[in-house]
Length: 634
Ligand code: ADP
Ligand code: MG
Image 1 (cartoon, helix red, strand yellow):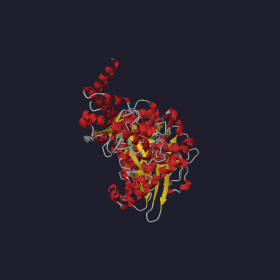
Image 2: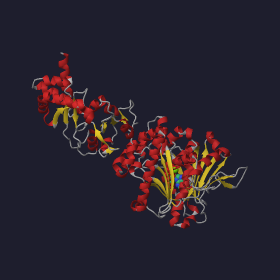
Image 3: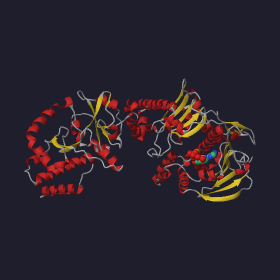
Image 4: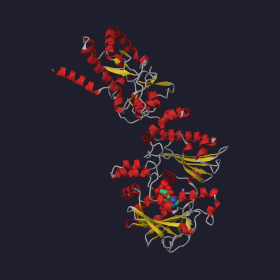
């Protein structure tokens, strides 16, 4: 038995040494140490790459059938040599030129790579989770091999144009020109002493079967028995999504997910559908259980793997789902699109547009079902992807009614800050006479919970949704109502407590008569800082708060705009005073003069602090506060 069943390269020439890109060196170092407990995944990665290579060749051969000449059956071979301690994965796919081997097997081309490496902490456990999200690919071979050789010849090139790439993961690799009869690539692993189990027929066969069942090409292994030279397929060689749903087991769906998503973790849910009739296509969509590292990166790859009549066309076809569902992974296989479809064409095609709305519905249905069937899994989902889904409220008005029930919020109803409350839960718990869905937005959920704006609501036992997500103010600005109940920001305008406010209204009238003078004096002291000073119905414990007009920008939007360099227009808020509060009563009793002004300014700054987390002039604020404290201590 020979090492490489396929190639014994004639002596190479033009040999050259190259250094790995710094990121690759880092990846290798990390992977070898932290992925040891998942080391069999190298096989999935190599079979995946072989399958991708065959896919790519089949695609380019559509335009140039000559590329398949003499070797038209695309396949994958896995073989081992126990005595030599080697394992070989070979394909007869697209292959690599020398330059491609240097570029593809020496660098990482993905966008955001540098960012990713900055996020590594040096803590092995954390980093190994991260590395799984990044996708380890070809380099995972070094988890089990101390030396890896790659022999390749690009489709369409003559047998003299082969390349041998080799490395011992020591920071360098060598390439040399070799003669190579076979088209495609053979990856030869020289197994580490402690990884020799992978050259064991039984172990290898069971792994190969597991990792290749969903692959659309035959994966061949030698028949069992000493010195057997007969190859036999170990998989069904039917792309998983082309099989009827009833014939595919959960384990197979999970394996396939790991293949398409390059994710170690299991998916939370999937949906496999064949659409027939005027328009025909199959889709297999997955919801991952954790966010990829580049979820928030604008140029990150996203989208589905596109096939047309089983032929792989492209990765990351982002035209089939809206941006707010960018976390969904999977495959779409169309029977109607032309094989030569391009990204540009996808963008303009009405067929694609129709598929996109149908697939969007599918995903939203799948999420609704997950929420209904498995609250724990849904909580995981929401934690990872909730703020992305929220974008859909603004981005996809047509589906707003489908997205709203998917939202989850922290609430004054729960002790915990976990987002557990669905809008339907809130509505079901509304008090008699309550007509609004109240919410408050702050920097953190804790800050929202402690917000002065909701003191009265809490006292009345009215539930308030607590929001602290970057996008919340923007999202809530887009929605009007849910199940006929309108939303109400507790920090804006009138609280509109309606029937629930009876007593306060009467109290307020009475207080108003008595406090007319005070309100005017405070307004005079604050001047332009506020548009009006009035009596509050929303406070019970705090002396004052600043209330925005219904359409003013809140603190969160102001910060987002400021960060993007657009100086935010500052609406003038209303200062509300709690006339039941000792400080306010003290103010009322203070004669006009510097003391009165100081105290009024202090109340105003406090209220500003509670509203936006900062004051216009922290120095002044602190000096005022200290002066007052010093007086108290005299
Ligand atoms: P990915 O598959 O996600 O692109 P990998 O690290 O697995 O990342 O592979 C890196 C690149 O090396 C691939 O994109 C491809 O260009 C090249 N490559 C790897 N294996 C093969 C193969 N069997 N045939 C052709 N090219 C390959
Ligand atoms: Mg790969």
